[in-house]
Amino acid sequence: MIHFLKVHSKQQIADVANLAQEIWQEHYVPIVGQEQIDYMLEKFQCEQAITKQLSNGYEYYSLTYDGHNAGYMAVVSNISESSLMISKIYVLKSKRGSGLGKQMLAFVEALCRQRKMKKIWLTVNRHNKHSIDWYSQMGFTNTGPIVQDIGAGFVMDDFRMEKAIG
Image (tube, rainbow, N blue to C red):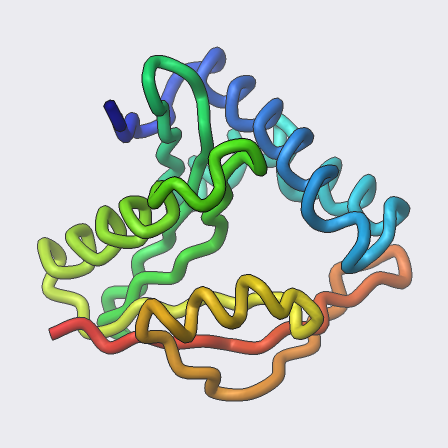
């Protein structure tokens, strides 16, 4: 059974930070390298960073599957653009292929419809072929490259992908 829980408490934030450590290590090291992963986890996914993001309009949701933490996501609403950005959407490697990602995306789409927003967008590393293919299968369109300096000599070399919500 799947449950989505809006993240508020210190324990929930710690759980998300722990999931981030595990998921990012198992998925992103081959794509961007250990040094960049270490930097990004400390800058964007430690407990302090998540707490700050929550106070700046991010909404985090944890995903439990059969009573165990299995993934998490973060979204940011932009009312003036009528869009919802998926900042993070991650599932443990051991749970991939079980349909959890699709259910997470359906949850985000429902949020978008409830808020009467017209599109969902995200960025994905341009070398993350598996994820790009998955987003394309889920109805997202690649709208072009985005390169963002994230400090310490690192950049996020991504594609922006969008999906219209009817």
